[in-house]
Length: 496
Image (cartoon, rainbow, N blue to C red; front, side, top):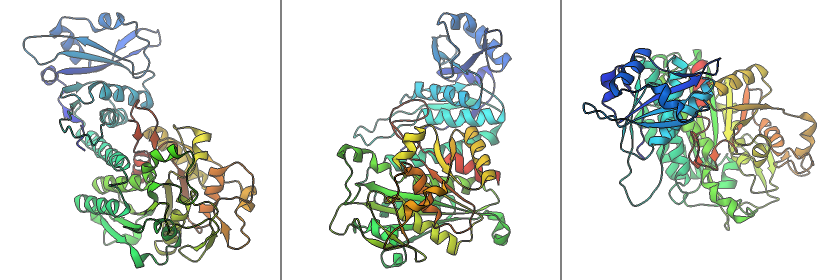
């Protein structure tokens, strides 16, 4: 789908006048007085040109100053195209508030053929946050037969082209992840998603390797899940990024390996989901794989001096004559055996293969998996924070900080060793759903299971079951896929 992405514009009255809408921002100072933000000369020139006082116009609405609160002021002049001025609240002017304000402007013009000139904020971090969220607010996706979908043209008043360019890369990557998540499963099977990865690899210059069929002989978890839908069957996709200037010094680079759950549709298998309407959103069960694919696409453009490998574990969890059964025992990559208790806990089975493959073959300095894994994570943290599990407290603090700055928030959850006995199996190395215990901590025990496959690596598990999907169309997010994880992973990798 086509999307609207921010472009730079000179900070002048002339550039503002070429737009049909001008977006400015306001806040309240320490004395609870209204203040119009933005370049003083530009604001004064706009007021003079339209013969108005913005604070007087704003006071008419009794504004609260809340972030994202937006008011529209009609204007007219014979010598310009401008028809309206938007005044959007910046709240406390934190990055979170700036994202809300930007998304409000984006949503205001979503689906409209309109030129918007924005002079709402300055500062490097603020500009980056505003540009990304402005784009996300305009996001649209559908497969309606009416192709006459309109998109706004977005212009931001800035001289900082580099920051804006980087923001556009991130915004495009998030929209790519959203597009993949929204694509219905009758189109988006594992083969299709592998082809999308190949296409993006050619476009942005990273290597893509796809394994299928007999090539997956060692991937017991991926085959157990994916063979329930043998046409086309599961896929293992390995994405490899090296900075252009460092291909001769690979061993000197830190190596990040990302593993993403890519269940293109999840019926629950033999352990069929109930009630059945919970399946409707399950085309989004590949959001983790979408996030790492989009992240590598962004990284390949931003060119950090880090080596990145991403493993997309792609399968459909279907109900068929070739589905795995509760009580099956499977052998994962590397030889660990696992007793399957509930076929609807399939995500950890495909991730286990990816983690074991990375530990054995890729020698990562950092090993991160990301998955829409458990409903328990959503029950515990809602949809604003992803559940993060790691024993590396220093790395956890870094990711928490980056999450707050980027907008992809994480909460450090405990790996509780007292719950390890829940993974005991009488017939295999482990059971995969921790059914031997009654700890009511499904997200925790799922993480404990995955930890069995990471060796001694610096490992982080991100359970994004709550954050990968939005149940409402509001703020930055449309109803459906959010593209969660792209900002977090990209900003973290860029910081290494």
